[in-house]
Structures are given as structure tokens and as C-alpha cells.
Image 1 (cartoon, rainbow, N blue to C red):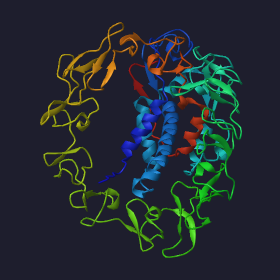
Image 2: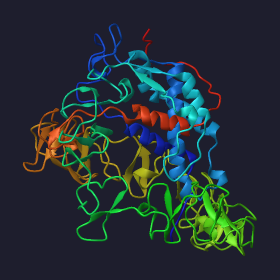
Image 3: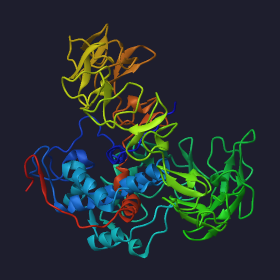
Image 4: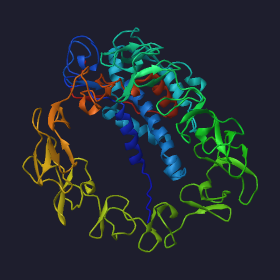
Length: 554
């Protein structure tokens, strides 16, 4: 039986934070925010004379900037995840206050470091009045990129690093330049996009070297996109075209205009959607539409009857109780379409196939195919029955396994730094086992160790032979090294400029055209992305305070 579960706001926030963190390339070995004189090239050279090692103070300004951007990132994630998976369930929709409060907490806990570095470095100026006005112009969630409102038309940042100068973050640079690497291995600097025939590459968190507008990066070289009728299996098609993989070899063809046949939105020109097998102009909320149309623009908007049992259809939000519908997809999550009207999903004791058939707070009991109240931690449960809202069903009780709690797998342990230790039927959650101890149930060991023969051993260093880790089921080496498949020996990570076969072999994590390169600047500090996240966020009063981490800088 297929099981479905609600997507909790906390889990969604974790997804957004993961995307947020993925924008931060790890510094190469030897880099960091240690002390040093002058700004230097990159974050690793220190931010100025007299700073203590590892010291940082997050100001109210840095937290405010970070909060707007992260709240926008979370809202974009909400549109992509909950907007579709939960059919726009009102109960699942986080409020603007919730988004900003969660974002602010993460920023206060350290996520605002990029913004503090920018404020302290003097390489960029933030227009706080424009940022607040832009954040107030909340945008609706749409299928594509939203139009930029007037309040967000002006630049939100001004970079002060001259073209060609060393940069740390994307917004350091003047308009028309990007914080990238000139030859894929040099230090980051403010550069105009690469022209035709120049090297280009993407890797890590963002572009290592971008091509100028109208060009595409193919085989690590900037070139013109494929034209109509050209092969496109190895090359992007030009604007207004798409790659038709229905023929061999695949070729570029024109995207459909209004009235042209289609099977999906991707086959239609920009701004159009595929409705009833033909490309059509996307419709705004409230606009009349035909039954079966899929051209409504809002994420939560569908073409459904304006009234229960009525023939007239319009683009409307998915309906709640009593709203007109043709099928269950016209209704919000936890509602079903019955006799042309949205009605609450099954109650306790009513039939179901999966959790989505039951009302909010209920689950589908796989043993009886009836809706039942989902047990919470501490409640009685039945294996194979309704899933616990948190944790697992252990010996008839829902438990969230903390240190010392019973478990059968590492994933059952509540804390991310806990694993399941012991033998099946007699295991508890605890700290990852050190060298010489028995591996966890899933073969996990403490950092710097691997599982062999059921026991944890030290990972080999550079020059030693690779070892097989029973946990990951792979050949592994210690920190700062990778396993060379050809020799089965541990080799030190390569520096920028050295030959490579994959990013795993490079200190920066980026291998471009067979060469280790510098890591790209954070995508979160790209002026365009910053503007997008600010205008996708919500402006509500912020409870701002400066947060001191470690020792003060000033």
C-alpha cells in the first residue's frame, strides 16, 4: 500500500536551509576567516588588521538582510513542495510571520555570516529603504519567474569593487560583471562574462565562469546555441526553441504559439501553457476558462466550476468545503470531490487507501483500510498501522529515540549525532563509536573512522591503500584524500590548476575541463538572487538584536 504523509513545516524549513547552505562552497584547505592584514583575495585572507581568529559579531543589519533573503528562499521552497504535494492545503500554508521568525532564528544562529562579511568588508552597500519596500511588495506564487514589481526595480545593492578587482561575494562587483575566476583556477575577481571561444564551466555552488548573454557553455567553451534544425544532444537550443528528443538525433524546434498542439507546458512559448492539447495564454485568477484547461497561472489556481454543479469554469484557488469541483484535484488537500462539491476527507472509521484520503490529523490504518487518529510520541501504536506523527512504533509505543533509547536503525535516533548501537533486538541510540569499538547497526563510526569486520578503525591517510567501508559500501580514505581507483591508493586532494577527473578529487570540490578550479562565490550573494528572495519574502516587524558569536570584533 502506498503511504503518504504531511510535509511538516520544520521538514520544509530543513529543505530550504539545505539549499541555502548548498550555496556556500567550502574553502580550500588552508583557507578560512583567520586573522590577517588587509582584505586580501577571498575570505581566507582575513578581513582586516587586528581581528581575532574565528571572531564574528552578527549585527542587527546583517540579521535583517539575511532574514528577508532566507524567508524568501523558504517561501519559494513552499511553492515548489507544499503548493503541489499538499494541493495547497490551507492548514499547511505557513504564515509570513512563521517564515520570517524561522528565518530570523537561523540567521541569528550564524546563517547571516555572509551579510556580516559584506557589511564589514566595505565592498558593497545595501539600500535598506529599497530592500524594505521591495520586501513589502509580496508576490504571488506563479508557474514561472514573477514580473519584478516597481518597488523592486531599483538595484538593492551597489558593489564597490572595480572591474578586474578581487572579490569575495557576488554583490561586490559592479553591474555587468560577475565574481568569477578568469582561467578557472585563478583567484576570484570581478569579470565581464566570457565571450565566444573563451573557457567556461559550472560547478560547486554556481558558475565558475559564465558566458555572455546569447552564448552557451558547451565542452567548457562559450559558443552560440543551436539553431532551429540543429542537433541539440550536446548543445542548448537558442531562445524560443526546445530540444525535440522524440527524433534521433534530437534537434531544436520552435516552441508552440497560441493554438499549436502540445503535450506539456515545456513545448509552448514563454508565457503560454498547454491546455487541452494546445498552447494557450496563461490565465489569471478569476479569468474564465474551459473545463480541462491547465493554463491557470497561480500555483494553487485550477480551472474548476465557479459553483457546485455549475457549468461555468474559472481559474480559482483549489476549493474547501462546498466549493465546485470536477475531480479531487480541484479541492485542497484533505478534501475530496463528491457530487460536484469539495467535501472533507474521510473521518475516523471511514474507508481509505492512503493517508491523503483521511482528514488532517488522521492516517490510514494499513491493517483495516480505515482512517484512524495518528498516534503521537508516547501513544500506543501497532506495527503496520497508522504511522506515528514522530518517531517509530517500538514495542507498541510511538517513541522518538534519544540517547539510550531503543532502536533498530540509525535513522530511529532523534539527534543527528546519534547512531543505533548494539545487536538487533538489543540496541540503543548513542554517540558514533570510536576507533576500536563495534560499528553501529548500519555500519557507522565516528568521524575519521570506518567500519571493517564489524569494528571501527582509523581511516588511512595519503599514500596508504584504500579501505572498504561496510557502512558506505565504498572504497574510502581519510580527510584530505581520495581513493585513486587505478592504484587503489589514497591520494591527497588536488590544488587549483592540477588535473582531475571529478570534483571529489579537488580541494575546492570543482573540476572543470579536467582541471581543479577555484570554488565559485556563494549563489546567495548574487545580486539577482538576493533581489528575488527579498521580493518573494514578506515584510513583517522584525524583532532584531545583535548576536555575539565567540568574542567581539570591535
